[in-house]
Length: 344
Image (cartoon, rainbow, N blue to C red):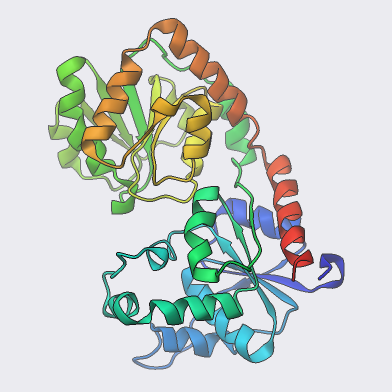
């Protein structure tokens, strides 16, 4: 399929700003995922399928997020629009794993009895995938099957933030780590806080700054942990630190890691975070298991580095972070999307 001759729409729900940029890069119309009332079935897969049949016909639907995916699958099955999944969340993560059971009744049922059916649906009706990281591509592959084309295209830092962070001079001699994110369990901030007493056994003055609204105030009861809450200017969050930490239990490709690198902060990330590709390119020691023990060991190992090593890592982090500007990444997404369409 050739994109210039195809009508493309992005079906989304609360899109990440970078994904709006992706839609712009491929001249896609934005179609807001909305539920129409079906009584008690409105907030269910049945409701999502019903909604999918109400959307206008396009040649290609680029779908962001798991809930819009259900609707798009129904549209694909009945109206034959091509479906390209933008894998940018962890909705399919557990479906590809042998130990999947899920937290809801529906997910548990799928995990125990319906995984082959899910894979059959994915391989038949998902025509292609653009994943935001190699990690996301890896966990999507078992769901969509071996023959479905998958390309990887990373998101980008918003232009105003990108420009501001380029001027940050982090405090590389300080034993201070910062983490930025929302207070969701999958972000793993609780594990990093749990790790901090172990870090302080080696570095009694070490500080952890938790940035983002909604984190429990009780985190501050752990010595060395400061809950800063929402910070208007990320430069103010990054400047006092020498290390950025992304302790996620699972994360497809958190832009906060890219932002920290743009500001010159080396990132410590978990194996289950898509930006392990970026941290690992700087040093294998910056990628650890998603556990309090491994996080503590990773932070201590970084704080044990001398000033010259820290500056070298900072310079390389800043150089790599500078590659995540909007124009470069939008072009890369368009190329990945075109490659998928050409395979259909």
